[in-house]
Length: 449
Image 1 (cartoon, rainbow, N blue to C red):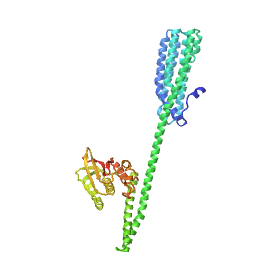
Image 2 (image 1 turned 30 degrees about the vertical axis):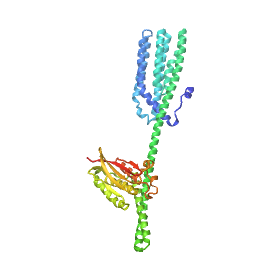
Image 3 (image 1 turned 135 degrees about the horizontal axis):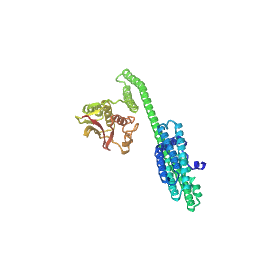
């Protein structure tokens, strides 16, 4: 058997136990059909040989075959394949049980085959050889998942028939013996190849399962790392607020001390503007970290879309007027299902970006029905987006090349926060149109009945 072990490829060490387990499962699934089929073949052989062999011999042989069949079926019924995954000892015991049953069955069939070849005529000999061929082909598909099971069943049947045919002394029978030897070699090679394909199939499936589990593990690690980063970012932002607030109080105290006519008032105003920008950045960082860490709750309710949009426009109107921009809103009577706070933050972020990147012209806010949705539009005559920037505009900490020289404010978090916020509502934002004369951003909300 050493040469055979060298020919059959061994499974990778990582999957060796799993492959043996799957072989045991395959044998368990096919054993009942194989055993019952072998018993029925025995009844057919007894029927054919009944006129030519002693009846006691045939009945005794058939009784042994039936007893072995019943024992193997009872053993099959007792073993539960679901336990193979948790009990390696049961797997090995089951395979030994199948090997023992296959060997006993092969010995019984080999005995009746040799008896037939020695005591009967050419017609019955040819019938027995045909039965041997059929048993070999059927067992190749049933038992080759575990090569030892096939060999323990097939070789005790076929090998004794070769000297039995030669002993008959007829030239035709000797020719049959040569053909039977060729058939034995062919079946052994075929079973080895079937076993090799079966192991490759199992190895591929197990590799896919392992890779899927590894990807899930890496995904979970990446999510844990991202959440840890978000918590650290939130903690850092919270810690930075205290010194920034202290600086703000110091600047306010300084302005009171130097008096309104002091030339240092202008410097204090610049410092206050810088502190205001810093507060805005800290708020954006805090919002980003809360969204990444999934700490933003969603409180669904029916919202008056007109009131929410008017509130956002009213908040941004002074800043737009300070930049000589016309901010216009088209009223609506539609109501939506959303979270009021999330919707408010989304609109303020979009309007803030529009005001910041629109040097001259106007900004228009409106909405329209789109099936069961409401689509909110924000149009401006600003600098627009380049095709490349339109793809990356919603990424974290990304500021497009098209804003160079226009504004130095912001960390590139506004549109990223807008997308993450809308995804909490099951929606998304997109750049509907862009050109050198402006852009149109749109997002949808679920329309209330």
